[in-house]
Image (cartoon, rainbow, N blue to C red; front, side):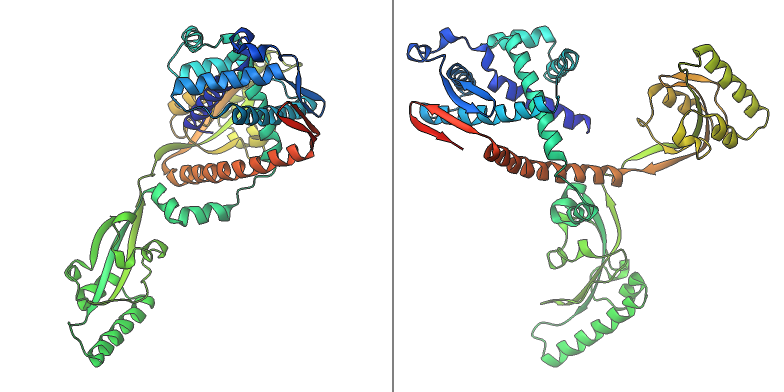
Amino acid sequence: MTSITKLNALQSLLLSALLLCSLTVQASELPSNKQELLDKVVAIVDDDIVMQTELFLRVASITNSLTRQGTQVPAEKIMQQRVLDQLILESIQLQLAQKAGIRIGDAQLNTTLQNIASSNNMTLAQFEAQLMLEGDTYAGAREQIRRELILTQVQKREVDRRVRVTEQEIENFLSSKAGRAQSGVEYQIAHILIAIPEAATNATTAVAEQKANEILAKLKAGEDFQKTAVALSDGRQALDGGIIGWRKESELPSIAADIIPLLALKEPSKLIRTSSGFHIVTVLDKRSDSQKIIEQANVRHILISPSEIRTEAEAKEIISKLHARILGGDDFGPIAKSNSDDPVSAIDGGSLDWVGPGQMVPAFEQIMEQTKVGETSKPFRSQFGWHILQVTERRQQDVGDIIQTNQTKQVIYRRKFEEELASWLLEIKGEAFIEIKNDQTNNEAS
Protein backbone atom coordinates (compact mmCIF):
# COMPACT_ATOMS: atom_id res chain seq x y z
CA MET A 1 0.00 0.00 0.00
CA THR A 2 1.28 3.43 -0.88
CA SER A 3 1.71 6.21 1.68
CA ILE A 4 -1.25 8.08 0.11
CA THR A 5 -3.42 4.99 0.49
CA LYS A 6 -2.37 4.60 4.12
CA LEU A 7 -3.17 8.25 4.81
CA ASN A 8 -6.63 7.93 3.27
CA ALA A 9 -7.26 4.79 5.29
CA LEU A 10 -6.26 6.52 8.52
CA GLN A 11 -8.43 9.54 7.75
CA SER A 12 -11.37 7.24 7.02
CA LEU A 13 -10.74 5.44 10.29
CA LEU A 14 -10.70 8.73 12.17
CA LEU A 15 -13.97 9.85 10.60
CA SER A 16 -15.58 6.52 11.39
CA ALA A 17 -14.31 6.63 14.95
CA LEU A 18 -15.59 10.14 15.52
CA LEU A 19 -18.98 9.27 14.07
CA LEU A 20 -19.30 6.09 16.10
CA CYS A 21 -17.66 7.05 19.39
CA SER A 22 -20.61 5.89 21.46
CA LEU A 23 -18.68 5.40 24.67
CA THR A 24 -18.11 9.10 25.07
CA VAL A 25 -21.74 10.14 25.38
CA GLN A 26 -22.96 10.11 28.94
CA ALA A 27 -26.32 8.65 29.97
CA SER A 28 -27.15 11.97 31.64
CA GLU A 29 -27.12 13.60 28.21
CA LEU A 30 -30.00 11.41 27.03
CA PRO A 31 -33.62 12.54 27.18
CA SER A 32 -35.30 11.53 30.46
CA ASN A 33 -37.72 9.16 28.73
CA LYS A 34 -34.70 7.23 27.36
CA GLN A 35 -32.95 7.02 30.73
CA GLU A 36 -35.78 4.90 32.10
CA LEU A 37 -35.12 2.15 29.55
CA LEU A 38 -31.32 1.98 29.67
CA ASP A 39 -31.05 -1.60 30.93
CA LYS A 40 -33.27 -3.33 28.36
CA VAL A 41 -32.02 -5.82 25.78
CA VAL A 42 -32.99 -4.66 22.28
CA ALA A 43 -31.43 -7.50 20.29
CA ILE A 44 -29.92 -10.93 20.77
CA VAL A 45 -27.17 -11.65 18.23
CA ASP A 46 -25.86 -15.22 18.43
CA ASP A 47 -23.96 -15.28 21.76
CA ASP A 48 -24.10 -11.52 22.26
CA ILE A 49 -26.71 -8.91 23.11
CA VAL A 50 -27.29 -5.28 22.16
CA MET A 51 -28.51 -3.16 25.06
CA GLN A 52 -30.89 -0.21 24.94
CA THR A 53 -28.10 1.86 26.49
CA GLU A 54 -25.73 1.02 23.66
CA LEU A 55 -28.35 1.83 21.03
CA PHE A 56 -29.30 5.21 22.53
CA LEU A 57 -25.69 6.21 23.16
CA ARG A 58 -24.72 5.37 19.58
CA VAL A 59 -27.74 7.24 18.21
CA ALA A 60 -26.88 10.28 20.35
CA SER A 61 -23.24 10.20 19.27
CA ILE A 62 -24.05 9.99 15.56
CA THR A 63 -26.76 12.63 15.90
CA ASN A 64 -24.27 14.99 17.56
CA SER A 65 -21.72 14.39 14.80
CA LEU A 66 -24.25 14.94 12.02
CA THR A 67 -25.50 18.11 13.69
CA ARG A 68 -21.93 19.47 13.95
CA GLN A 69 -21.48 18.76 10.24
CA GLY A 70 -24.70 20.56 9.37
CA THR A 71 -26.28 17.36 8.04
CA GLN A 72 -30.01 16.89 8.49
CA VAL A 73 -30.78 14.08 10.96
CA PRO A 74 -33.38 11.48 9.90
CA ALA A 75 -36.50 10.81 11.94
CA GLU A 76 -35.82 9.15 15.30
CA LYS A 77 -37.41 5.81 14.36
CA ILE A 78 -35.41 5.59 11.14
CA MET A 79 -32.20 6.56 12.92
CA GLN A 80 -32.73 3.93 15.62
CA GLN A 81 -33.36 1.22 13.04
CA ARG A 82 -30.28 2.17 11.02
CA VAL A 83 -28.07 2.26 14.09
CA LEU A 84 -29.48 -1.03 15.41
CA ASP A 85 -28.65 -2.69 12.07
CA GLN A 86 -25.13 -1.30 12.37
CA LEU A 87 -24.70 -2.59 15.93
CA ILE A 88 -26.00 -6.03 14.97
CA LEU A 89 -23.52 -6.30 12.07
CA GLU A 90 -20.69 -5.12 14.30
CA SER A 91 -21.63 -7.68 16.95
CA ILE A 92 -21.53 -10.52 14.41
CA GLN A 93 -18.12 -9.42 13.15
CA LEU A 94 -16.67 -8.90 16.61
CA GLN A 95 -17.76 -12.41 17.60
CA LEU A 96 -16.07 -13.78 14.47
CA ALA A 97 -12.93 -11.82 15.37
CA GLN A 98 -12.95 -13.23 18.90
CA LYS A 99 -13.23 -16.79 17.56
CA ALA A 100 -10.35 -16.10 15.15
CA GLY A 101 -8.17 -14.73 17.96
CA ILE A 102 -7.96 -11.24 16.47
CA ARG A 103 -6.73 -8.75 19.05
CA ILE A 104 -5.47 -5.17 18.91
CA GLY A 105 -2.75 -4.56 21.48
CA ASP A 106 -2.00 -1.24 23.12
CA ALA A 107 1.22 -0.78 21.11
CA GLN A 108 -0.59 -1.10 17.77
CA LEU A 109 -3.41 1.12 19.02
CA ASN A 110 -0.97 3.81 20.20
CA THR A 111 0.78 3.79 16.82
CA THR A 112 -2.55 4.13 15.02
CA LEU A 113 -3.62 7.04 17.20
CA GLN A 114 -0.28 8.77 16.63
CA ASN A 115 -0.66 8.28 12.86
CA ILE A 116 -4.22 9.64 12.92
CA ALA A 117 -3.09 12.70 14.84
CA SER A 118 -0.10 13.22 12.51
CA SER A 119 -2.23 12.84 9.37
CA ASN A 120 -4.37 15.69 10.69
CA ASN A 121 -1.28 17.78 11.54
CA MET A 122 -1.84 17.38 15.27
CA THR A 123 0.06 16.09 18.24
CA LEU A 124 -1.66 13.51 20.43
CA ALA A 125 -2.37 16.26 22.98
CA GLN A 126 -3.95 18.44 20.30
CA PHE A 127 -5.95 15.46 19.04
CA GLU A 128 -7.28 14.83 22.56
CA ALA A 129 -8.17 18.50 22.95
CA GLN A 130 -10.04 18.47 19.62
CA LEU A 131 -12.07 15.44 20.72
CA MET A 132 -13.03 17.23 23.93
CA LEU A 133 -14.13 20.30 21.96
CA GLU A 134 -16.41 18.04 19.91
CA GLY A 135 -17.93 16.51 23.02
CA ASP A 136 -15.94 13.26 22.92
CA THR A 137 -13.21 11.86 25.16
CA TYR A 138 -9.82 10.46 24.29
CA ALA A 139 -10.58 7.24 26.17
CA GLY A 140 -13.80 6.78 24.24
CA ALA A 141 -12.16 7.47 20.88
CA ARG A 142 -9.33 5.12 21.77
CA GLU A 143 -11.66 2.20 22.44
CA GLN A 144 -13.80 2.93 19.40
CA ILE A 145 -10.71 2.99 17.18
CA ARG A 146 -9.63 -0.33 18.71
CA ARG A 147 -13.07 -1.67 17.77
CA GLU A 148 -12.77 -0.28 14.23
CA LEU A 149 -9.33 -1.85 13.81
CA ILE A 150 -10.72 -5.23 14.85
CA LEU A 151 -13.60 -4.87 12.39
CA THR A 152 -11.15 -3.91 9.63
CA GLN A 153 -8.97 -6.94 10.35
CA VAL A 154 -11.82 -9.45 10.40
CA GLN A 155 -13.21 -8.00 7.16
CA LYS A 156 -9.82 -8.23 5.49
CA ARG A 157 -9.30 -11.77 6.77
CA GLU A 158 -12.66 -13.02 5.54
CA VAL A 159 -13.10 -11.01 2.34
CA ASP A 160 -9.51 -10.99 1.03
CA ARG A 161 -9.73 -14.67 0.16
CA ARG A 162 -12.67 -13.94 -2.12
CA VAL A 163 -10.92 -11.23 -4.13
CA ARG A 164 -8.69 -12.10 -7.08
CA VAL A 165 -7.32 -9.59 -9.58
CA THR A 166 -6.16 -11.26 -12.79
CA GLU A 167 -3.58 -10.02 -15.28
CA GLN A 168 -6.33 -9.92 -17.89
CA GLU A 169 -8.42 -7.59 -15.72
CA ILE A 170 -5.44 -5.27 -15.31
CA GLU A 171 -4.76 -5.31 -19.03
CA ASN A 172 -8.42 -4.69 -19.86
CA PHE A 173 -8.55 -1.70 -17.50
CA LEU A 174 -5.33 -0.20 -18.83
CA SER A 175 -6.64 -0.47 -22.39
CA SER A 176 -10.02 1.03 -21.45
CA LYS A 177 -10.78 4.71 -21.86
CA ALA A 178 -10.70 5.24 -18.08
CA GLY A 179 -7.37 3.44 -17.81
CA ARG A 180 -5.81 5.39 -20.65
CA ALA A 181 -7.03 8.66 -19.16
CA GLN A 182 -5.47 7.70 -15.82
CA SER A 183 -2.13 6.89 -17.42
CA GLY A 184 -1.99 10.17 -19.37
CA VAL A 185 -0.90 8.43 -22.60
CA GLU A 186 0.03 10.63 -25.56
CA TYR A 187 0.19 9.44 -29.16
CA GLN A 188 2.41 10.67 -31.98
CA ILE A 189 0.08 10.41 -34.95
CA ALA A 190 0.68 10.34 -38.68
CA HIS A 191 -2.01 10.63 -41.33
CA ILE A 192 -2.56 9.95 -45.03
CA LEU A 193 -5.52 11.42 -46.92
CA ILE A 194 -6.74 10.45 -50.36
CA ALA A 195 -9.05 13.35 -51.09
CA ILE A 196 -12.27 13.37 -53.05
CA PRO A 197 -13.66 16.64 -54.44
CA GLU A 198 -17.00 18.10 -53.42
CA ALA A 199 -19.94 16.70 -55.36
CA ALA A 200 -17.71 13.86 -56.58
CA THR A 201 -19.31 11.30 -58.86
CA ASN A 202 -19.55 7.66 -57.84
CA ALA A 203 -16.85 6.85 -60.36
CA THR A 204 -14.47 9.47 -58.91
CA THR A 205 -15.12 8.23 -55.40
CA ALA A 206 -14.49 4.62 -56.48
CA VAL A 207 -11.14 5.56 -58.02
CA ALA A 208 -10.10 7.36 -54.81
CA GLU A 209 -11.16 4.38 -52.71
CA GLN A 210 -9.21 1.98 -54.92
CA LYS A 211 -6.11 4.15 -54.60
CA ALA A 212 -6.52 4.29 -50.81
CA ASN A 213 -6.88 0.50 -50.61
CA GLU A 214 -3.73 0.02 -52.69
CA ILE A 215 -1.82 2.34 -50.35
CA LEU A 216 -3.19 0.50 -47.31
CA ALA A 217 -2.08 -2.85 -48.76
CA LYS A 218 1.46 -1.53 -49.27
CA LEU A 219 1.57 -0.16 -45.73
CA LYS A 220 0.45 -3.51 -44.34
CA ALA A 221 3.20 -5.16 -46.39
CA GLY A 222 5.80 -2.96 -44.68
CA GLU A 223 5.97 0.21 -46.76
CA ASP A 224 7.22 3.19 -44.72
CA PHE A 225 4.25 5.30 -43.65
CA GLN A 226 6.01 8.66 -43.65
CA LYS A 227 7.62 8.08 -47.05
CA THR A 228 4.25 7.09 -48.47
CA ALA A 229 2.60 10.16 -46.97
CA VAL A 230 5.15 12.48 -48.62
CA ALA A 231 4.62 10.82 -52.00
CA LEU A 232 0.88 10.17 -52.07
CA SER A 233 -1.08 11.93 -49.31
CA ASP A 234 -3.32 14.88 -50.06
CA GLY A 235 -3.29 15.97 -46.41
CA ARG A 236 -1.87 19.26 -45.12
CA GLN A 237 0.96 17.46 -43.30
CA ALA A 238 2.01 15.37 -46.31
CA LEU A 239 5.39 17.06 -46.72
CA ASP A 240 6.07 16.50 -43.01
CA GLY A 241 5.69 12.77 -43.51
CA GLY A 242 2.01 12.99 -42.57
CA ILE A 243 2.94 13.68 -38.94
CA ILE A 244 0.17 15.47 -37.05
CA GLY A 245 2.14 15.52 -33.78
CA TRP A 246 1.64 14.46 -30.17
CA ARG A 247 -1.94 14.27 -28.94
CA LYS A 248 -3.50 13.24 -25.64
CA GLU A 249 -6.52 10.98 -25.88
CA SER A 250 -8.87 13.89 -25.26
CA GLU A 251 -7.23 15.73 -28.19
CA LEU A 252 -7.38 12.94 -30.77
CA PRO A 253 -9.07 13.72 -34.11
CA SER A 254 -12.72 12.79 -33.73
CA ILE A 255 -12.69 10.61 -36.84
CA ALA A 256 -10.11 8.26 -35.28
CA ALA A 257 -10.52 8.80 -31.51
CA ASP A 258 -11.78 5.24 -30.99
CA ILE A 259 -9.28 3.69 -33.40
CA ILE A 260 -5.93 5.23 -32.48
CA PRO A 261 -5.69 3.87 -28.89
CA LEU A 262 -6.16 0.32 -30.22
CA LEU A 263 -3.39 0.48 -32.84
CA ALA A 264 0.01 -1.08 -32.33
CA LEU A 265 3.00 1.14 -33.10
CA LYS A 266 3.39 1.71 -36.86
CA GLU A 267 0.23 -0.30 -37.57
CA PRO A 268 -1.92 1.38 -40.27
CA SER A 269 -5.59 1.79 -39.47
CA LYS A 270 -8.42 0.62 -41.65
CA LEU A 271 -9.76 3.12 -44.20
CA ILE A 272 -11.78 5.87 -42.56
CA ARG A 273 -14.32 7.54 -44.84
CA THR A 274 -15.37 11.17 -44.33
CA SER A 275 -16.79 13.82 -46.62
CA SER A 276 -13.25 14.95 -47.47
CA GLY A 277 -11.97 11.54 -48.56
CA PHE A 278 -10.36 8.34 -47.30
CA HIS A 279 -8.00 8.52 -44.32
CA ILE A 280 -5.36 6.19 -42.93
CA VAL A 281 -3.77 6.94 -39.55
CA THR A 282 -1.01 5.32 -37.57
CA VAL A 283 0.72 5.73 -34.22
CA LEU A 284 4.42 6.38 -34.65
CA ASP A 285 5.16 6.46 -30.91
CA LYS A 286 3.51 6.57 -27.49
CA ARG A 287 4.55 8.13 -24.21
CA SER A 288 3.05 8.49 -20.76
CA ASP A 289 3.27 11.17 -18.08
CA SER A 290 3.42 8.30 -15.60
CA GLN A 291 7.03 7.73 -16.65
CA LYS A 292 9.29 7.44 -13.60
CA ILE A 293 13.03 7.03 -14.08
CA ILE A 294 15.00 5.61 -11.15
CA GLU A 295 18.54 4.37 -10.76
CA GLN A 296 18.85 0.65 -10.10
CA ALA A 297 21.86 -1.34 -9.05
CA ASN A 298 22.52 -4.98 -9.81
CA VAL A 299 23.72 -6.19 -6.42
CA ARG A 300 24.95 -9.35 -4.78
CA HIS A 301 25.70 -9.76 -1.10
CA ILE A 302 26.82 -12.10 1.67
CA LEU A 303 25.04 -12.11 5.02
CA ILE A 304 26.44 -13.52 8.25
CA SER A 305 23.91 -13.32 11.08
CA PRO A 306 24.48 -13.65 14.82
CA SER A 307 22.50 -16.52 16.33
CA GLU A 308 22.13 -18.65 19.42
CA ILE A 309 25.34 -20.45 18.48
CA ARG A 310 27.19 -17.46 16.96
CA THR A 311 27.98 -14.27 18.85
CA GLU A 312 28.05 -10.78 17.35
CA ALA A 313 31.85 -10.76 17.48
CA GLU A 314 32.06 -14.16 15.75
CA ALA A 315 29.71 -13.02 12.97
CA LYS A 316 31.81 -9.91 12.40
CA GLU A 317 35.01 -11.97 12.33
CA ILE A 318 33.57 -14.40 9.75
CA ILE A 319 32.40 -11.61 7.41
CA SER A 320 35.81 -9.90 7.73
CA LYS A 321 37.62 -13.08 6.69
CA LEU A 322 35.29 -13.58 3.71
CA HIS A 323 35.86 -9.96 2.72
CA ALA A 324 39.63 -10.51 2.82
CA ARG A 325 39.33 -13.61 0.60
CA ILE A 326 37.34 -11.70 -2.02
CA LEU A 327 39.82 -8.82 -2.01
CA GLY A 328 42.54 -11.45 -2.41
CA GLY A 329 40.98 -12.66 -5.67
CA ASP A 330 38.48 -15.36 -4.66
CA ASP A 331 35.20 -15.36 -6.61
CA PHE A 332 32.32 -13.67 -4.81
CA GLY A 333 29.63 -16.08 -6.12
CA PRO A 334 30.95 -19.37 -4.77
CA ILE A 335 31.80 -17.79 -1.41
CA ALA A 336 28.25 -16.42 -1.12
CA LYS A 337 26.77 -19.78 -2.11
CA SER A 338 28.77 -21.62 0.56
CA ASN A 339 28.62 -19.11 3.42
CA SER A 340 25.74 -16.63 3.18
CA ASP A 341 22.92 -16.86 5.71
CA ASP A 342 20.47 -15.44 3.15
CA PRO A 343 19.11 -18.73 1.76
CA VAL A 344 17.30 -17.19 -1.21
CA SER A 345 20.15 -15.15 -2.68
CA ALA A 346 22.85 -17.66 -1.67
CA ILE A 347 21.52 -20.18 -4.20
CA ASP A 348 22.27 -17.65 -6.94
CA GLY A 349 25.71 -16.63 -5.68
CA GLY A 350 24.34 -13.85 -3.48
CA SER A 351 22.46 -12.12 -6.32
CA LEU A 352 19.64 -9.76 -5.37
CA ASP A 353 19.10 -8.83 -9.03
CA TRP A 354 18.17 -5.22 -9.83
CA VAL A 355 17.43 -3.16 -6.73
CA GLY A 356 15.94 0.33 -6.62
CA PRO A 357 15.38 2.98 -3.95
CA GLY A 358 13.26 1.88 -1.00
CA GLN A 359 13.55 -1.85 -1.63
CA MET A 360 16.25 -2.51 0.96
CA VAL A 361 16.69 -1.49 4.59
CA PRO A 362 18.36 1.95 5.01
CA ALA A 363 21.74 0.60 6.20
CA PHE A 364 22.02 -1.64 3.12
CA GLU A 365 20.77 1.01 0.70
CA GLN A 366 23.27 3.59 2.00
CA ILE A 367 26.26 1.30 1.39
CA MET A 368 24.84 0.20 -1.98
CA GLU A 369 24.67 3.85 -3.12
CA GLN A 370 28.25 4.52 -1.99
CA THR A 371 29.77 1.42 -3.64
CA LYS A 372 31.14 1.87 -7.17
CA VAL A 373 30.48 -0.65 -9.93
CA GLY A 374 32.83 -3.61 -9.61
CA GLU A 375 33.84 -2.80 -6.03
CA THR A 376 33.24 -4.85 -2.88
CA SER A 377 32.06 -2.89 0.14
CA LYS A 378 33.61 -3.10 3.58
CA PRO A 379 31.69 -5.22 6.11
CA PHE A 380 28.68 -3.34 7.51
CA ARG A 381 25.86 -4.06 9.94
CA SER A 382 22.12 -4.05 9.29
CA GLN A 383 19.24 -5.27 11.42
CA PHE A 384 19.73 -8.71 9.83
CA GLY A 385 23.42 -9.12 10.58
CA TRP A 386 26.78 -8.43 8.92
CA HIS A 387 27.00 -7.91 5.13
CA ILE A 388 29.39 -7.30 2.31
CA LEU A 389 28.03 -6.39 -1.09
CA GLN A 390 29.14 -5.90 -4.66
CA VAL A 391 27.51 -3.65 -7.27
CA THR A 392 28.00 -5.30 -10.66
CA GLU A 393 26.02 -2.81 -12.80
CA ARG A 394 23.96 0.36 -12.61
CA ARG A 395 21.19 1.54 -14.93
CA GLN A 396 18.45 4.14 -15.35
CA GLN A 397 15.13 2.34 -15.48
CA ASP A 398 11.61 3.53 -16.21
CA VAL A 399 9.37 1.88 -13.62
CA GLY A 400 6.31 3.95 -14.56
CA ASP A 401 4.60 0.94 -16.13
CA ILE A 402 5.19 -1.13 -12.99
CA ILE A 403 3.81 1.64 -10.78
CA GLN A 404 0.84 2.11 -13.09
CA THR A 405 0.13 -1.64 -13.07
CA ASN A 406 0.28 -1.75 -9.28
CA GLN A 407 -2.01 1.27 -9.00
CA THR A 408 -4.45 -0.32 -11.43
CA LYS A 409 -4.40 -3.53 -9.44
CA GLN A 410 -5.26 -1.55 -6.30
CA VAL A 411 -8.14 0.23 -8.09
CA ILE A 412 -9.63 -3.07 -9.24
CA TYR A 413 -8.96 -4.72 -5.87
CA ARG A 414 -10.72 -1.96 -3.92
CA ARG A 415 -13.76 -2.11 -6.19
CA LYS A 416 -14.01 -5.89 -5.94
CA PHE A 417 -13.33 -5.82 -2.19
CA GLU A 418 -16.25 -3.44 -1.61
CA GLU A 419 -18.54 -5.63 -3.71
CA GLU A 420 -17.48 -8.79 -1.88
CA LEU A 421 -17.67 -7.07 1.52
CA ALA A 422 -21.28 -6.10 0.90
CA SER A 423 -22.11 -9.70 -0.10
CA TRP A 424 -20.24 -11.13 2.90
CA LEU A 425 -22.03 -8.85 5.36
CA LEU A 426 -25.38 -9.98 3.98
CA GLU A 427 -24.28 -13.60 4.27
CA ILE A 428 -23.12 -13.44 7.88
CA LYS A 429 -26.25 -11.53 8.87
CA GLY A 430 -28.39 -14.16 7.17
CA GLU A 431 -26.54 -16.98 8.95
CA ALA A 432 -26.69 -15.37 12.42
CA PHE A 433 -29.42 -15.83 15.00
CA ILE A 434 -30.94 -12.38 15.49
CA GLU A 435 -33.87 -11.68 17.76
CA ILE A 436 -35.00 -8.06 17.97
CA LYS A 437 -36.80 -6.99 21.14
CA ASN A 438 -38.22 -3.60 20.44
CA ASP A 439 -41.29 -1.72 21.72
CA GLN A 440 -42.02 -0.51 18.21
CA THR A 441 -41.43 -3.87 16.54
CA ASN A 442 -42.89 -7.27 17.19
CA ASN A 443 -40.34 -9.86 18.28
CA GLU A 444 -38.81 -11.55 15.32
CA ALA A 445 -36.00 -13.99 14.69
CA SER A 446 -33.84 -14.52 11.64
